[in-house]
Amino acid sequence: MTITLKVNGVSRSFEVEAGVTLLELLRGAGYVGVKKGCGTGDCGACAVLLNGRAVNSCLLLAARADGGEVLTVEGLAVGERLHPLQEAFLDEGAVQCGYCTPGVMMSAIDLLAHNPDPCEEEIREAISGNLCRCTGYVKQIRAIQRAAERMRGDGSG
Amino acid sequence: MALHHVQSVTRPATLEEAWGEKEKWGKAARFLGGGIDVVLYTPPSVESLIDLTGLGLSGVTQDVAGITIGATTTMTEAIESSEIRAYAHAFLIDVLKEVASPLQRNVATFGGTLGSAHPWSDVIPALLVLDATLILYDGAERTAGLEQFLADRARGRGTGPIICGIRIPRALESSRGAHAAFTRTAFDVATLNVSCVAPAGKSRWSDLRIAVGGTPGLATRLRDVESAAVREAMSEEGIADAAASAVNARDDARASGEYRRTVARALVARCLRRISEEPEGNVG
Image (cartoon, rainbow over all chains, first blue to last red; front, side):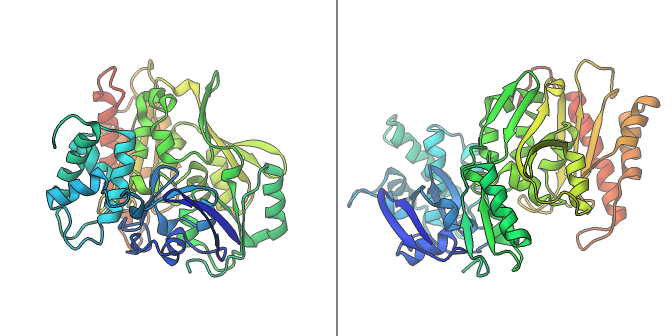
């Protein structure tokens, strides 16, 4: 079957078998920033935005996303200019092995789009579907706080 | 590939088309709401998936009769709904925030949750105590109480209608509710869960509703306990003891029936305490 998606702002058509997940489609198309972890919706490594909301792409059939807009971690930077969230992750040292990082970022992008000034509890809740075995989450939370400040433009962060 | 056996995924634009597709494929068809359960649990016999998200069944509306939640409304959309926030002191929002993670709540739908009807569902006991009614379509539109729908489903009768929406009655809009689930980890499914609702403006526990799920069977109302609470003017402890005795608790790999009864007593007591202690004006 043919599926049409706008991925990172670019409209594309994909020929896929009916039972393919969005994760399989995206990785097969070269969007390897989308990570495969558990495959059962527990770890969040595969998170992408579908129509503005963060979802587990491993639990979503590609056909279910047909006609939608997908944002992956590859779509955050503009050319060589990193997204403020990516900059904040670098500044705070919030990346260790990095496998969970794209998924955590996509959950954070969803949060900040709907809540530009989240408290720590709201950040913890927003990334509660993303498992990280390295950082202990503390630096990731700081990075999201710093990104929120920068994106609001109310401080040097 | 996740689902090798699936040959067809369609997204009908009308209920008639969706039902026609279901009739065409028979038992090899499965309706698709958010689709999480379909990816995780679909048996190899399923060859056709019918995506219901093109039917315009998303959204929350309110009228004189109460609130209607469209079947393809996601958990997140419901959490963000002002109508649901204002209903029963945001009881449903408190429940929905306990369901999985935001990543899954952004996809999971009410229709999918009720269609799957997992015994550990936190949403089902909450809707049972709210006297939810389902709007169904199986060639013609009809309504059925949630309890009846679940009973029919368990008996293998009436399975397969399209769930179009869920109605919760205005009569309970001022109620206070509480939900408690016993899980091993934050995202684990419930070993046992309890929902209680007590309508406002009535004498203490005079119109209490209790539902217990994960027994390990599907959630059910404890109507005998609800009646006894009024008839015998029971205390909170008495109600919790009666609920523990009445719950149809059985052994499985997660817990023994005896353990579940003990958990039921604790969770019912916890819910009743929350309802009685909740300050006026606290809408979560």
